[in-house]
Image 1 (cartoon, rainbow, N blue to C red):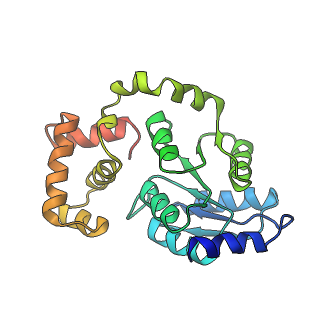
Image 2: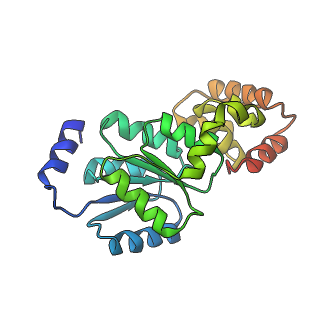
Length: 224
């Protein structure tokens, strides 16, 4: 579905229509909980997808008012999923819903074009407020996270992941999840040589001596 088609479908639904949501998460319990919470909050159709690739297809098919997406997904990450959805529809309203509480991830989510970011550890009422706000075209960040983001530039040097690009983070996540260089290349649509060079560059940027060091750093900062 093209951007104009998605926008036209949203407008055709009318101002009084129940908002529609798409949840992209690979944990069935999370999806089930989100469905119940949003149904009770007055949402209409609530679609779901278990991977970024499925999420992009579901967005094109469903044209939801809001997309709730996790960062850590099988296949392409939530960041890449958001990028693809926004590339197809720049008006897409995306809320990241993640276990990662480090402001580096919130900053990158907002920079990617998302309209909000909320931790899975927050109160369910805050989750509903976040989804409603983004569905209505607003921006949602908890006050504490917004405060931490205001100090992000000063504190970012303390986080070694700050040196990595979004693609680097994607490759690191797959390496830590046991994917081979060849598998990563296939998932991300790059040559094996490019993936291997990127993996070496990531290890150097992190000052890691081995994949075990890389896993430790990624785990410490809640990337995996």
